Structures are given as C-alpha cells and as structure tokens.
Length: 414
Image (cartoon, rainbow, N blue to C red; front, side, top):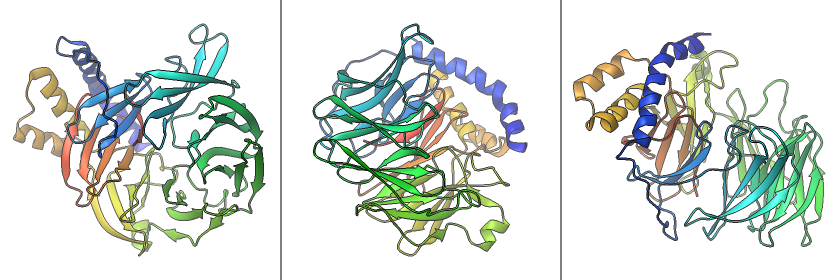
C-alpha cells in the first residue's frame, strides 16, 4: 500500500495545479486556430489520449506544439481508444460510442473515418452496439496490413470481433471468438487474439470478407505467469511480456502463428533487487535498430501497474540489456512547466534542483519510440500529467512538453 498513500499525499497539490492548467488553457493567450496538417506526418509526431478531457491529441515532439485534437464518443462515457492510420496517411479510423441521452439512452457504436490532414469526420459505419469499453490499450481494434479491414473487439461479456471494410465503408460481419479477447494485426487479412487457456486465435478473411477462425495450443501459462496485453510489433513478429518479465515472441507471417523461444528481461540480480515491468504501456520498440525499451520499477508481487522509474534498453539480437537510464521526475517537471505557463517564466535552476531532490519520483506510466533514423523516446505520466522527450539512443532529455491534458492514458504514433 506504500505507493497509493504516496500518490494521495500529492493529490491536493495536483488538484491545485489542475485548476491552474484549466485556467491556462481557457485564458486569453489560448487562442484556437484552424489549420491543415502536412500530407506526411512529422518524424516525431505522437498522439496522446486523455480519459478526462475525452480526446486524442496530436503533438510534435520536436517543438512540443499541440497540432490538433479528435474528440470522439459521448464525453464521460467509456474510453477513447487508439486510432488506426491508413498506410497513405490520408485517413484515421476510430471506434466510438454515443448515447442518445448523454450518459444513458439508446447506444450507437460507429467506426468513424477522419481526414488525417483536417481531422474532420468523413464518414461513419454503424456497428453492433457491443464494442468493448475498457481503459485504453493498444489492442481494442486493429487494421489489417492491406489496409482494408478493421476489426473491433466486442465484450458483452461474450467476446467477438466486428469486421468493417473501410474501403467500401460497410459493416461485414460479427465473428464469435468465445474465450479469446483483444485483437492484433497479423497479416494482410488476418487478426490475432489471446485466449484464456494461454493459446491464440486467428481470424482470417477471404476476398468476400468471410472469416475463418483457428485456434492454437497454449504458448504461455495463464495461471503461473500470464502475459500482458501491451505487446509491440516488429515486422511479422509480436513481442509479449509476462508479469515476471519473460518475452514471448509470436511470428504471424504464416497462416498459423509460430511461437519462438522465450527469454527474460531480468537476471537473478535484477529479481533479487525486486525489479519488474510496470506501467500502463511498458514496452516500446525501434524496429530498424532492434532496440526494445522496457519501463521498469522496483516493487513487490502484483505491482505491475505501478509506474516505472527507469527505462531499460535491450538488443533483440543479443537478448541482453545494453542501457539503463532514469525517467525524469514528473512532479517538478509539471510544476516547472506550469510556472512557465502562468508566470511567463520557468523556475530557476536552484529551485528546480531542490524540487527534484525533495519530491519523490512517482515514475511514468507509458513510453513510446518513434521509428525514424534519429528516434525519440516519449515518456508520459498520468499523475501529474507530464510528457518528456528523450533521445532514444542516449537517453538524454531533449525537452519537456507543457499543457498535455489532465489524465493521459495512451501513446501512439501515426
């Protein structure tokens, strides 16, 4: 119970800062502008969803600027899920839920297509009102690699997938997937799901959109060491990590998934020191260099949701940790950035140094790596809402981004 009490001690300070943040966003300097985004995303653009503001916001990691927002679904009901991006960067697909009486009444689920440059809605497809509503993760929906089909995960509590043809803008089918949940892209017309017995399920679609469902034998033990759903992808391979820090590779290049040898993020010394993965989005991957980033913290059993205090970097070819660096303390960072917004100037170096020494580091909840030749690592904390940009190769802090929202929940790139 140590960490919950520590968070409560900061709650009063945070609420005060949130009030100042809300004022700053609506103040005379917060002039809204209508712009059109470039045809190609910037190399360090990233999206950040917010469960309180009920929006998905686009930021530029190079300038720290807020470029645009998408607000979807009925505010206060359900969560904003991760958008999906077409390969040509022209369209964004987002599953949404609306209620006719605000928080009650007739429910309507839709898959909305947005223009990726104006962020304006272009079209929508009405779905069966069974879309799963859970804290934002990276497996609520998926876009097939050929860019044609979107699969939306349903939970009523019966599990199924809703399939939409986004090229023809039409609902195709609802595919029952008993005992299997979430959804990951697994090929041009194929999706992958995780099953309660430790196996996987694939849903393959033919030219007409007809689904073929197949199950595999278990590849992890859900009782002894279950995997988390926060997987990352490199080419045809998904990397899942277990609560005990064991990597489970899943190759989806063939019709039937192939499960590679497992390996551990932790050695005996790490386990003795109580290091383990943590946070709401604890893996990131730079595909070109084969560098895997893991958000780590020191904690006891069942502390996997605690924020991370360090980022560990692994060479996938060597399956070895090659670098470690601490996350920037989000508390003094948030106070410093709010001082800049409200008072027109950041804290002095000595004051910032004192805050960093006095305030405990609550850690960050999620990480993301961009995929360019000079990648940056994005770190995001929920309490307080703070975002830090690091050089992904060295770990050095590049910048801190103010005014990111109120309750960040998921990072993703276009």
